Image (cartoon, rainbow, N blue to C red; front, side):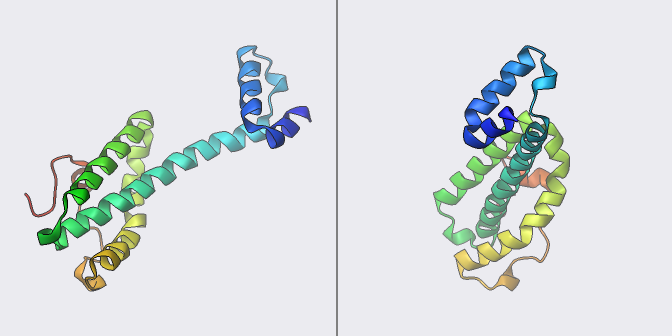
Length: 147
């Protein structure tokens, strides 16, 4: 099939061709298998971005919480940046908000280990489960130890 070859050879050209086919409502010409794959991939990419940003955010919250005397401004900037980026993604895809509890549960052990590695504190210093609620994690005004 010509569309599949274009997909493999020049992805951008393929996307433009598929958009033109949709505009012309010539649905029988669509490269359905690859369209399905790309649409699913777009959703997976947004979920992955949320998890990645949550990991960084939670790690910095933990560092701030458990090494409060050594919190450089860069930690606060990172926390704010990650919160903003998560909100940008959620504003484009609000249905991802319901996945936040599971995403936090998934990333927390990794954030905990990374916080321990970066601070030099024993892993046991950090709670085994996330000590912050979804609302606290996303709250621009929440910083552990400042409440």
